[in-house]
Image 1 (cartoon, rainbow, N blue to C red):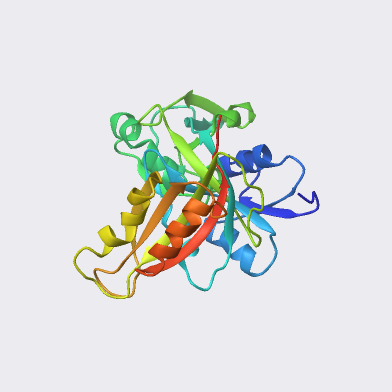
Image 2: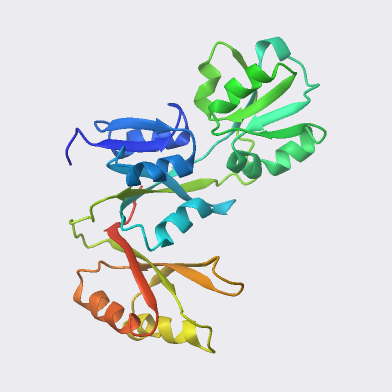
Length: 278
């Protein structure tokens, strides 16, 4: 891959998305953005050649902005890779607020959701405030000028402005986020351990539509590792179905299977790429 390419991520530097971008490729030019929608939009205005975004979390589920972006017929981008990160949240305060009488807690909504039990058990009276990212929550607390805390990644404990209050505060200790890399170009590499992501929808609701569409996977003995529905926003009851299956679209068996499925529904292939292995 060309080292001069720009990869967009949810910034600023120091977020989990920043860490994921560094793990994916230390050499690519890293471009931070203020929100996931801005990250995705950078593909459309060509300010990024590819982006890395969280797709799903083991506690909070899928990131709907990313699902909607991938399903949009106007977007012809491809998933070219994935990686998983263990997420371990810490809670901090500023040195000037070194007590437990906090009125607010700042963080990204995903982090607040992933730490719901700890917050309820320890700071039930604190008002939860939304930040663009876990790293931005430090700056937000500084500017708010009221006693409070923020939830961020463990490496923020090295910041001289803050005091670490507690570590590993996520409600479920096995907290993992799956990131995907989205590009203008598809992944040309084929391995013996690939995954294909796709989305299907139906022009009209009919009994057994989903069963008929998915049947060829069973007949062809292709393992389906994920299926999730998401409203199309066109009318109540209409859904996209996001599906991951094992194999590459260049494999003859999967290619023939998708040709059959395409005759029963609207099919959009989101990309084939190597399965992440630790």
